[in-house]
Length: 302
Ligand code: AMP
Image (cartoon, rainbow, N blue to C red; front, top):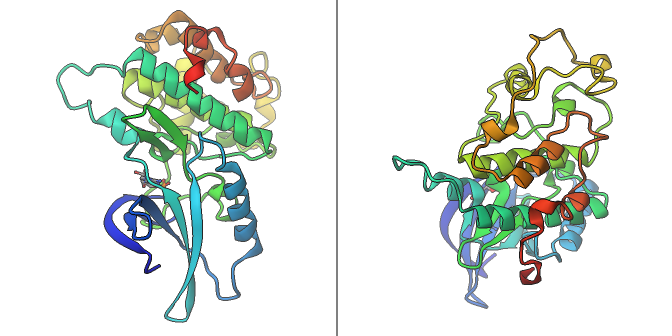
């Protein structure tokens, strides 16, 4: 670890602090993440598998690159550091940076379109390897402002380290991007959970505020139901048999175009397909790339 010189703390993730550091050998900035692993018995095999998967996946330009993995012994304990390429900001900070002015401008439509394309590429890439992210949110999407790049970070860590209810700082893990099937306690969930999160992020870029800012699991569901209508067996076959299904207030679906007025009609159409209740009917990340919303995007730049 002598190779890296810490510059400043840049964030607190679900699993620990993230530092900006300088690689003394190359002069490059890197992001250092210390994982909080209990490694009394050596590195758990699940973590090793996780890290090698992360290395494989991070060969994509849409995934933050894992440069190296360092293990250090400190006070008899083994610590594992992940060294990532450094990006100057994350999507949450990027969205929030214009929020406190009087007229909250949406992000430029062309930028939203480009970010969405890169995000769908990243998610389709993970899904093609059979990997779910499970915790996509603006905080773990990293942005290179000058190049207009968006990359997924913190990939797959959710599996070896399991998604906890609270972060190590006891901050509640956000529920805002969680798919309804997960909230309703389904036993089998898959790639559609990530597409739901992508939909929520899409709307948030356009609104500059979260679409479903629930403060508890029930509140989260009610936020969703109020906009998309309370689901029933017609909209989502099998919903009433899910483990945590209860009787809820009955709401009718509201207009998405009205809820996210700055999106173009084809943007609203894609959003609706990402926020389909029935996971089997939800659009896949790969199919989203071919949606007409991206028709006028210059894809050669990717
Ligand atoms: P995470 O644990 O990935 O959610 O990281 C927590 C915060 O640290 C993020 O929201 C970012 O602000 C920051 N961060 C994480 N990875 C990087 C990186 N590779 N480059 C720059 N900042 C990062």
